[in-house]
Image 1 (cartoon, helix red, strand yellow):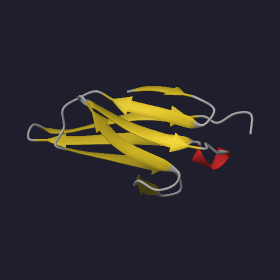
Image 2: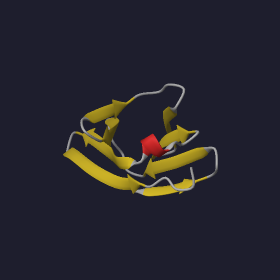
Image 3: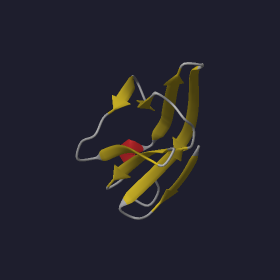
Length: 85
């Protein structure tokens, strides 16, 4: 799992070949992240991305990427820390 950010967008990406990819945010509950005004999921040339726009302190959490294919599933996590807001 890799990540980088700009002031406007926090990018998280994973490089594996999956049939389905799901992004989740851990908090009091685990929330599946779907495309909306605050984030976008995308796939480009074997890389899966989660872009979080206009990052806020409430975005701080453990982000999970769950990939599923015929061989099984893989769960990768990254801790998102938000500072300076």
